[in-house]
Structure formats: structure tokens, C-alpha cells
Length: 338
Image 1 (tube, helix red, strand yellow):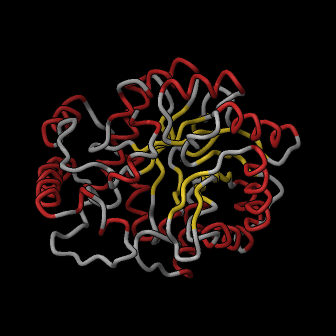
Image 2 (tube, helix red, strand yellow):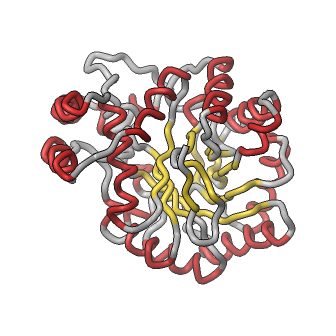
């Protein structure tokens, strides 16, 4: 597994990271035993970056990741780097209730995460969405205090716009910006990616397969549970879904020409963005099973030539996707869309 430096101030991490959210929440039921086995397989394959959030199933995901680390061989456990998001508020019914970026809340969230994960420090800590009532300088400043005390190693950001990135970076060193980036979500390229490059900040890209939409495995007639995020996502509804899966079929022809899967070529495309934009881009793979993990890891062996990139662009042009990447209410919380 190749490695990348997560920005000029961040740690060295694997070229692909493992996003663990789906093992606990938002994509229907998951198998705990298989999830832990998938984390172990990722570590065995050289994946070092594990991404979670304290609000993923109200702490369940952190406890699952903690269990996976405790039961992994010592050498593999020691290589793991934990990226944790905080700040999203939930109620007992699982409803969303805004974000809290107050300094006291930041430290409170961190204390609980350290306990659930069973570690003495968090490698990269970031608020999931900007709290509109708290200046980003105060939130980042609180994380910086946790860094000084050794509870956190590096500071990250999530779904923030270029202006917020600059303000945060003027407060404390920022390792990376975590943001959705895929063939069908390319808004990051306009201002966020150039600003990050200028400031020596990496991009950790989530949603590289658009929540399975461009994985090549999503069927048009698939029935989604009510607790599955995609049941309410605009890109998975009616005519939008039909249009988007037509894009996938066009991409499938390109993938077959390369002798790879749709998922592999989509992930390889995100990997190619780093050198193209002279920055570090680390895709987070949301695999929930060892089978999907193995497929995703195969993307690291895919080399895309100029002709391949042109064919991919023709199959899935920028802004070709139908539907927003989140429901309207959630889009309102994205500082990155401002």
C-alpha cells in the first residue's frame, strides 16, 4: 500500500482510508462480525487511516472500531490512525438536532470518544459541520488545546468552504479537509481544492462511490429500508436514479475496456485527482464487507492514461448527476456549498 502525507503538517497515511460509518448506520443493517473482519482485513492490507464519527449510531461506530482495534494483532493495531468527526447532535429517536462547536462541547465530545475507542489520543479530530453560532476560530482553537495536551495529534476540517479553510488555518495547523469528492460530486475543484493546495492541506475524499450509486452494484429496483440514507437522498429518487444509473452504464463500458470494475475505475479516478491538482487526495472507502474491500483495494493497481481519463469524462461529465448530494435540509448545513 502506497502512503501519502496528510498535508504538510499531518501524518503519513495509506493511499486509501477506510470509512467505517456504514458498519453502524445510515445504510441499513450491517453484520458486526463481518464489519470487524473487514477492519482487520484493511489493516492487514496496509490501510492505516480509519474514519469514524461519535454520532454514527450514537457512539456505536466508535465502540465497534474500538473492538476491532482491541482484537487486531498488536502490530496492526499500532499502525492504525483514527480520524474522528464530532459535533452533530442527535436525540434518542435518532433525529438530527444541529451542531455544537463550542469549546467546552469540543472537549466533552473528545473525552467520550477517547473512552469509546479505547485509545489515549485521536490522530485527526474535526467538527463534522461548521456550527453557525460559533466562529470556526473558537472550535479549532479548542482542538488546538487538545493537541497541546496530547489528546489529539492533528486538526482536520469537514465540508467547509474556502474562506473557512483560510480562517481555520490562520488559527492552527490544519492537516486535511474531509469532503465529498467523486465523479458525480466535483464542486470541490472550484475553490476548495485550490485553496487547500495553496495552504498545504490534504483532501480526504468521502463518498467516492456516491454511497454505492456509482459502484456498479446498485440495482434500479433495489428496495431501501426507511433507515437507509439513500431512501431519502435526491440522487436515488425516481427519474434522478434512472438518469444516474444510465451514467453508471456508460462508465461500465469504459471500465470493461480497462478490464476493471466500475467501482475500481471510479476510485482510481479520485486517486488521479491528486497528481492532476498537485495536492494529496486520499479516498475513504466505505466498504462494509471483505469482498467490497478487496474490490476497492484493487483500484490502487489501476493506471489511468490520458485516453482513459478522456473516456471517463465523456461517460460522466462534470455536473452530469441528477439531484443534490443531500436532502435540502442537510444541504443547508454545508459550509462548503456557500
